[in-house]
Length: 262
Image (cartoon, rainbow, N blue to C red; front, side):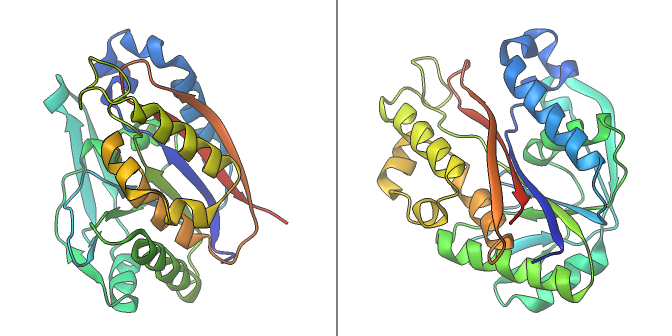
């Protein structure tokens, strides 16, 4: 789909935001610099709407929630930083069209942005990008079904003649170290290593058929949003590049870009 002009996988730990990290973000400097690189790349593109897929929004069970409001707001008050206040325009026309075109998408009237969306959007805002956003939450559906939603979304963008950038907000294993948020599992590193390699090789089948037992043991929230991103690029030759990976706080953070190419 020629209307999907760029894609990225970005993590969402609030510590990346200076007002939250308060110096601790230096411990994830590779991730910060890679996310800044992605934002600068996006800034140089010609596009209409920024699609952000968040695993921390209004989660769906049988249908993918698509946010349809005109304005979205949020901050990091839950993480000790009530300022700055974020405010983004929505794209309700595209959102409603995406729901109409997919029989397992549903309207979401939420207006508040969760940290899964806000962390990537912080880099977007700081780079000076001022585009409307289309926010999509994940649903606990099979990865193949989420991939199909991504396909449908791309077809909608084509029909509406909308050029879009798609960001999959995704943290990897939450169980890399004994003090990790999800506790420790020796298989956490196995999950992260495998997913990084699959993204590097743009192995779509490998990602969609990822071992569910390993994914569950790793305590991840990456595969759902990435599956939607991959669906949006289906039928397009893609040049993948993993810009960074690290996990100093027991959670794996990968930043990667997907560029349409020959």
